[in-house]
Image (tube, rainbow, N blue to C red; front, side, top):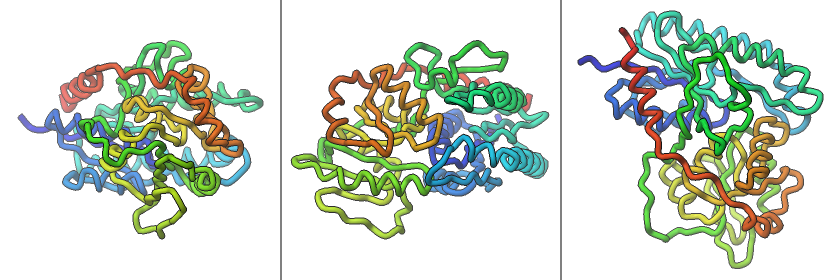
Length: 362
């Protein structure tokens, strides 16, 4: 029987979309599919490193610009026309590519232009609904309309979350019933393929894992460094930078620019507490590893601020705004929190991929 070819295309917006595609790609390979990776920038580079034997193609990115201060919502609103144009261009690029290189199915992670009129295409997203604070709520109906209009172009919407109260996305995915063809596929962690080691060598009391776009990554690093020299504590800082960047030295702290997925797994799984951003993919990794955590949302990123608040309100872990971060105080508060819910041992992703491959090219 001829193998089915599947194009897997994560958005290059930080590395979260790329890393949560890792278990999807692994499951496709387990089910004997031919996988083509499609992305751009750091996301494409990462997946090429992890899957060097797979075909890959570069597609246009969204080129979102970040800023040190000000409203993230306002920045996104100003860039809205260019985002719509990027979506239109990536759709044209997909049509041109599939005309020359036929594929049987498409899995897009938040790339709204990668639907196809004849090829089964699904989109992964945990953002079915728009959460906006304060005065920005006035835009919610408009953004909801645009979001669902884009999502409806896909045959299915795969939500990387559980359809239970113990979910991680809150009202972003669970506000009310939707007419979208939605399937909850469970949490997706980049560490899903690793077997936990029982060795305790390299154990850390605290692992700080930086991620996300500049300039906020550097801002957070400069704020955290003076607080990481904790007497009697073994601390590691993973900077989230390419390995060729100049190394940083700081007394009492092990500092690493870059780690492979396997190296990061070893550090995080052997650490008592993780300090990181509150991006959705990071939350799925923390839940998978069952680690205590302290969250620092990226300033102005509404989704991260909402998810951090959700985790605090549900008693999973403490959080603090970047400008008010007091590590010793947060470490004292940590025992009051229950930790993340235990992931369900589910085969939903396996079943959805099996169904997609069955429907492909029929």
